[in-house]
Amino acid sequence: MKTYIENGTVIAWQNGAHRVIEGGVVVIEGDVIVEVGSGIAVPADGSARRIDARGRIVMPGFVNTHLHVTDTLYTKGYLEESTNISAQAKETNYGTLYRTLPAVRHAVDPEAQVIAAECAFAELARTGSTTVVELGYDYEVGGDGAIAMTEQVAQVAMATGLRCYSGPRFRAMHYGHAPGGKVWYEKYPDEGRRRFRDCVDFCTGWDGRYDGRLRTMLAPGQIDTCDPELLRETRRVASAHRLPIQVHAGQSPNEYERIRSEYGMSTVEYMQDTGLLGPDCLIGHGQVMTRDGNMASLDPSEVAALRDSQTTVVHLPWVKARRGGVINSIHKYRQLGIRQSLGTDTFPFDMFNDMRMAATVCRIVEHSVDVATSADVFAMATVGGADALGRPDLGRLAAGCKADIVMVRTDTFKAAPAYDPFMFLVLSATGDDVDRVMVDGKTIVENGRVLAVDMPAAVARLNEAARRVRSNIVT
Image 1: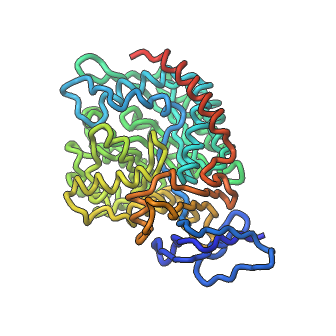
Image 2: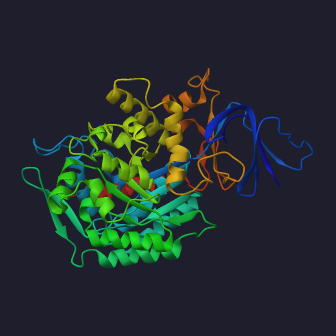
Image 3: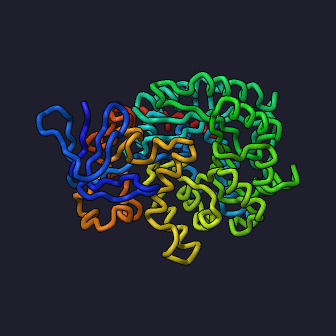
């Protein structure tokens, strides 16, 4: 039986761009969209399922290309205003990255990770992310790097009804902070090779499960914790098994200087030298890709390497802004022709929040309202992520695409009058405005409620686990 979503303001994909169709119709059969447009006849004889989207924007689900679900909720209320420790530390995220985050992750036990994942995935679904890229952690999170944790978290995502790319992390060394704002690095006993092999086994064995809703990704850890051969082997495996790659890079000035001092290269040059760059490669963060953090300072050869390889930079604007840092800027990346997408990274897992922050911070940095248009930012949050994953069937409402659909209320005081759906979605809406979410044509959120998760019970479990984790944190 076909499903007809009718009477809504439809954001359709036409001629290579999102277009608004007032009173449009979206037709679903099975797990795919078979027709989108206006003037489509809707059967009135009961032979089709009908969903009245009056007072709703009907849009593609967000493709959230970078986030962490196992420890994020235990950092809430703990690291937002934590000190940078040293007067010499740059304001970007020194205190969180090298001191607070490792301390919290060491305190998170395996059971607590699964509990957090349930609430995080539910929030992602509730706020309109239909495809998510979950990047797990290495030995510093409880469980000693056991791949069983990745398997359990993936199963939680599937139970929620989401489409998920699971990327268990691996690296050769870890880091921490020392007095005076210094950072130390220490290699794992086997330089992370056993964990790497476990991650490869998971990625090749689990990719495509759950009717294709679960996909996998190779995720080398922070670029400064991976030696050249580990990155080269990552590329070999990715190419052989057609797996995407995501690496954390451009997170801090310390990282940039570490790569320069260790290998005599910039961050971009190091990724190019080890073969990481490519249309299947995503760079998570991408904030400090030059010594001064200004993307206008990229060498022309670095610009060409990123642009011509079709590598995607995944921007995470809110997690940066709340620490006093900025991306400088998504406008510059766009001018350089470098592909971009958006992710939430940590809390809140609400892409509406990160779209608004992306647009606002860019305009502040560029001192202009003529940059980071709402339509462009919305595209980053949808087709930008889909293209990064090599998925032309996601992030779009068009015939042949997956029926991953979000309906956003416009029959509210906040929304009316809705002259421009893109401006409303990017500059005014929040995840609380989401009414219905569908993945593969199946409703997973209805009337703002996640159908697969008992919210009061899940929140109670999380609060209890959080008390246990907080008591175990040693900084």
